[in-house]
Structure formats: C-alpha cells, structure tokens
Length: 612
Ligand code: C2E
Ligand code: CA
Ligand code: CA
Image (cartoon, rainbow, N blue to C red):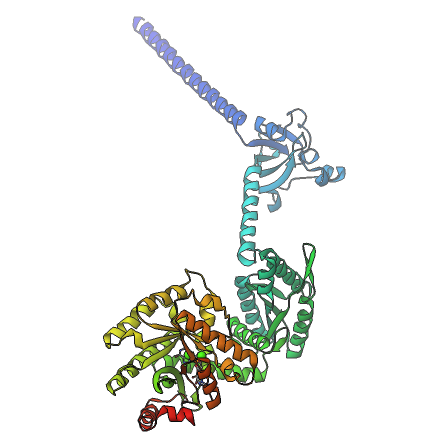
C-alpha cells in the first residue's frame, strides 16, 4: 500500500516536471517568433527599398513605408489601385480599358525580373524607378506579385552625364575645335573604312586636298580673328556643297581634305573640285568688312593599287603642289601625266637620299678676281650631282627637293669639307692667300653642330679662318632679323671667330640697305640680275653703285657676281668694285680642270685678260 502510494507520488512528480519542461519550450518558441516578427517589421519599415505586394490584376495589396516615401503617397490612397493609374508620367498612362485588362503573367519573361521605369511622384516630379518583380503564393494559395522598388535617379543621371561627357570627348577627339569639321584622325579612320569596303566592292573614292591661297595675307593684314573667320567660312562652304556621305576634314593650318566615296571617274571628281573652287572664293563677312580668299585644289582618285589612305593623300598632295606651281586658284588632277612625274620625282628623291648619305655629290669651284691686282682672290665651292643617266644636275634642280627631304645640312657639311680640303691643296700648290667660300643654307646655320664642326675642320687643317668665306643668302637673314634669331647670332659668333661672312644675292631680296650696318657680315655679293643689267638699265646701275658706295663707307667687302662680259667688268671697276666673279673670268670648274686653269693662268697676265 505504502509502496503503491510512493509510486503514485513519484509518477505525479515526474508528470509535473515534464509539464514544466513543455511550458518552457513553448514560451521559448513564442519569444523566438516574436523576435522574428519584430525583425521582419524592422526590416520592412526601415528598408530603403520600396516593397509592394500586388494581386495579379495589379491592384496594390500592401506596401512598406519606403514605397510610400518614394511615391510621395499615403498607403491608403494606393491600396486597391493599380500603380499604372498614378505612378506613370501623364503621357504614358494607359487607357482605363488597358488598366482594367491588365494582368501579370508569372510565366512570361517580360513580367519577371528587373525593369527600369520613369515614374512620377504625387508632387509631379519624376524619378527613375528600378523594379524587381517576382511571384509568391500566399497561405490561401493565391499568387501575388512581389515588387522591390528602388529610386535610381541619381545613378541614372550620373550615367547619362558620363555618357554625355564621353560623347563630347569623342567628338573633340575626332573634330576640329575651330571649324567643327572632322580632324585628321577621323579622316584617316574614315578613309581606311572606305578603302576596306571599296576593295570588297571594287569601287573607287576621290580625295580633294585644298589649301587656301591668301590665308597668310588675311592673317597678317586683318589679324587672327579674320583668319579664323576665313577658316570657318571655308569649312561651312565645303560642308554645304558636298553630299552627306562626303567627309570634310581640316588637316592643317589652312588645309582641308574632302573625301568623296563612290566617285569612279576623274571627270566626276573634277566637277566636284571645280564647284568647290568657285564656292570657296565667295566672299564672307568679317565684322563690317567683306573678305575673300582663294584656294588651290589637288585631286586624286583611288584605284586597285591604292592600299592605304596615306598613299592617296600623297597623290592629292602632289596634285595640290602642281596646282600651286601653275599659278594658284586652280584645280590639278592626279592624272596619268602627273603620275609619271610623281614617279620620276619619287625615284629622284630616293636617289638623292642615297647620294647624300654616301657623300657622292661632287663639287665645282668658281674663281673670283681682284681687278686691282689682277690676281685670283678666291674660289666659291658649288655642289653638283653627277647622275649616272641624266648627267650633271645643277643645284638649282635638286636643292629644293633636298630641302624638302631635310638634306640641306648634310649637303652643306660636305661642301664645307670640300672647300677646306681645296684650301689645303691650294696652299700646298703655292697659293697661300686664296679665300675659299662655301654656301650656307638656313638649315646649317641652325644646326647645333655647325660652329663646332667648322671650327674643328679649320683648326684641324691649320687654316686661318680669315681665308674662309661663308656665303649666306640675304633672304635667310632678313627673313627673321631679330637680335635673338639663330642665324643672326651664329653670324656674329663666326665673324668674331675671324671668318668672313658675305651676304649672297644681295640687292634683290629684302634689301634693307639700312639693315646692313646692323648685321655682323663682312661683305656682300651683288646679285647677278643687277650686275647683268648694269649697262642697259639705269636703275640697276644706280642700285649697284649705291651698294658699292655704302659698302665702302661701312668698310665691307663687295663682290659683283655674274659678270659675263668685258664691258660689265670695266663698268664695275669704274664704279669702284674691286672683286668680280662670273663666266667672263671662268665658269665653275671641277678639280682637274681647275688645276689646268691655274697652270694656264700662271702663263697669262690677268690684267691682259681684263684688257681684252
Ligand atoms: P650662288 O651662290 O648665287 O652661286 C652662283 C651661281 O651662279 C652658280 O650656279 C654659278 O654657276 C652661277 N654663275 C656664276 N657666274 C655666272 C655668270 O657669269 N652667269 C651666269 N648666268 N651664272 C653664273 P650654280 O652652281 O648652279 O648654283 C646655284 C645656286 O645653288 C647657288 O647660287 C647657291 O645658292 C646654291 N648652291 C650651290 N652649291 C651649294 C651648296 O653647297 N650649299 C648650298 N646651301 N647652296 C649651294
Ligand atoms: Ca654663293
Ligand atoms: Ca649669288
């Protein structure tokens, strides 16, 4: 009995304990659920993204405070309505019928995932709404649309701004800032594209290279703003008078290129060029003035051999050069004739590069005579190109090309060596006082090694600089006569080092007689065009006698060059010119002939020759 009682008590005690444990578990679960609910509530209320639950017909069931904030509306005024009614821009709101018929389709890709919509707030301001749509079935088994909305206006506007900047940068990188037409970079890209497509289709395209004729004059006379107006005028005229597919590009200061895709005949291209030639010359307004400018045009057409745009540009450029050479304000077509000449010049250019590089040019020497003493006073070194096929080519025929090719300094360094070597040879042959002259181009005067190499050449051979004459063209010095200009400074340095410096071709170029006193030259060579006319033209005679007198007053040497006759020599002598050079005395001679000439001279009295 007692045992039974004890067992009962123990049973009751265990049950009580188990019940207590059950209660504790339930309470824990409740607490956890409450915490979770609290977390959900916090997340929903404080999320910055808008959360929306809609029925599949679009009517809003529920939304969080963020959605209300984004839309600027109270929840009550939205519940039960389709956002299509109030969130769309007025011009985009669908008709009532469309809204009535609206249904989300959870199976359709169009109705799932991210969308970007321009929406409107209640105050009428718009914003970019990024909406993420998904679907869930509720406890009742009904399917709902769940929307997560985010105001991404700031991000979109930043992207748009970036895009605008990118576009502006792209425009700037491919266009000329002043005229707004394409630049060289865009031109090359466009022509490369055309070339690629025309090669495939076997068609051609034309290229016009334009260069304004009086641009420098406009700039110099009216100032840079007039120059800018001229460039804008030309760019506008070109754009207005070509087709949309044609490209107009500015490729240099006053140079433009027009690309005409699809042009197949040279005649058709000529028509375009002729039209542009006339149009560009039309006058344009600058302030209250009316200005004009002319243009030269070179035109070239691509063919099956055109492999890169640069090639065609070179042809158009060659034609442009031809247009300028034959009088400006004209069109020159790169036709068969011009092609032949171009090929010849290209061949010449590569030969010239080679002979200059290999120091294969030869030198002739032309003597000068002192009439007073009847003695040879010096020799001028003159370069020649002994061509294997074309024979002796004169410097006038190849120096312009050499200048374009940047070969002038090399040519002059070789002439200096020839002059100094000849000086040594003549010294050894018993002519110690002969002056040796060489011609110095602007390029060598500005060459950083010019003075040091000349000094080394002179000192190394034991030559007195006083016997070395540097002939500098009047145009080189007067072209840029400021105290700090390189030629002016170098001339002074050389004069101070004891060299003689003669101003060549004097009297026909810039001829500011007053400038003569300011320059560090030691003398002048009167240009042959003046000397030649001294007996037939009064003005030439007066200029020559004035130069001689002025040089006498300034203590400068004078040489009259291009003396061809005995009478001219006599007249110059009367005017007081002591030194003469010209065919009357001798043509330029090669080294061997010079030796014979000296030997013959030794047996003849120069004054006899003068008297003849
Ligand atoms: P320049 O320095 O005025 O040389 C005189 C030119 O006139 C030479 O022509 C000469 O042959 C020619 N000449 C001389 N006397 C007479 C004459 O009585 N009548 C006529 N009609 N002509 C005469 P060249 O040798 O053809 O040289 C032409 C120009 O080329 C030179 O004119 C000079 O400016 C330039 N030159 C020649 N060699 C060199 C050089 O090594 N370096 C540079 N920078 N220029 C050079
Ligand atoms: Ca000369
Ligand atoms: Ca000369």
